[in-house]
Length: 418
Ligand code: AMP
Ligand code: MG
Image (cartoon, rainbow, N blue to C red; front, side, top):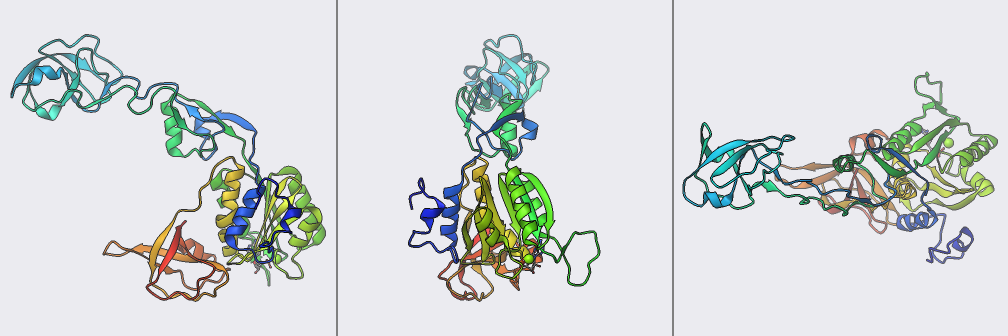
């Protein structure tokens, strides 16, 4: 596939292009071809930078540590003074973290030193306080001393000018601390992605109200709010839109004029009230609308103008599965990050699983460690795609590939941790 020149019109001519039952990996690759990351940047305080994306490489403006310092509470000495089996040195002062010793350590002398304190001039090693006998200012050393011991050297962690963080890196807690340790109060990041969300369905009612016959609570929008908040996106919550073609069309157009991405749930199957695919064809372009997977078979991806569109299924489990399997990486990429495929590994499955070949399945699993230290996985039980509690009880997906049939108890399966 030529990614550079891929357009929707050339898609249709691709031999293996089946928007009606697209394999999972092909769908991922296809989405990737259409993503162009945000380029606008803003400068923000580092305390506000959690889960934002670095817009440029960060070079260290300084050496870390910025001076030689002690990694122990003890005594700063000259190693040459401690070559005998027992040596007495005179304590001539103290060096505390933030309060360096101003003098110089001469032959036969030592300085009391605390963890984090600057190494006094003249000294070259630190002996732990547990290894000395103290008698006033007379300090007796009996242990051997290796020159340079217990000292962290200037620039040992990071050299001035070194690239410490790269463009596109997500800022987590460690990165916030690292930026602070280099003296940065502010950092330049890509602007937040604006994501419009709405649910569709006449049966949906908002939590807090009482249910009338035939109604259910709109849960998908709240799942999405959680998932998007975690990503650090700006959410434009458009509520629930009724199953009315004009209302859904108006919502799509409004969302596309304000957001970078539209994410909806429901209305993508082929029922009489499912307008999403038809409307997307009308006001935008559809890349695919059905995947060879379970749950999440109806998943529409396309564009409305410049805006990316993800039409997630209505079933609550399918919403989470399709978001985690397709949408999240796409959003990270649009945010300017370089996401990797989900981390996965193998485990023994302790429950048999019924599975038809021909589609990828993402069963909800519970991974546990046995007394023998080995990890095994079991399904959460009934895998109906409306059973949202299964997502809450599970801690991983059991990923069953397309060609896989039934899984026997005791087989090795592929796991993706949440
Ligand atoms: P649909 O694709 O619109 O036919 O929806 C498939 C199933 O998901 C139906 O049982 C819907 O009632 C249900 N559903 C759709 N949207 C939501 C939502 N926002 N919250 C909870 N369930 C939903
Ligand atoms: Mg519906």
